[in-house]
Image: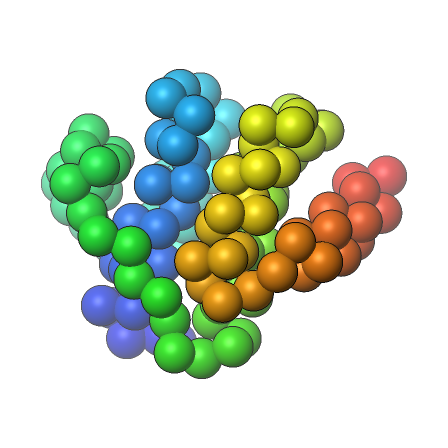
Amino acid sequence: MQPKNVNIDHFRNLVAMAAADGNMDDNEKDFLLEKAEEFNINLSEVNAIIDNPNEHYFVVPEDLGDKEEQLCDAVYIAMIDGEIHEKEYNFCVKFANRLGLTAKDVDEIITLSKKLMK
């Protein structure tokens, strides 16, 4: 289990990703609430983060596994409707770059996600 501060940073990064297009739909919120529960983040803290997505700084994890996990979650959010649109893809690539990962990493995760969704 990750330390709580690592989980909160991960959660904040996901909220930033979900809010990046200016619209956080119900499916994205549901996924975020599931992640918050998995991370054992209390509801008042969750609401404060979701209600103010731009007030939190982006935290790059030190561990490659954590970076990849966050990118997988970000791609999942982008593909929550079953496909990834150009704007969402571009956000994922920017997200990956901020994590020190590449567009190739995003493409590999998308390919794997599509296989898993079938």
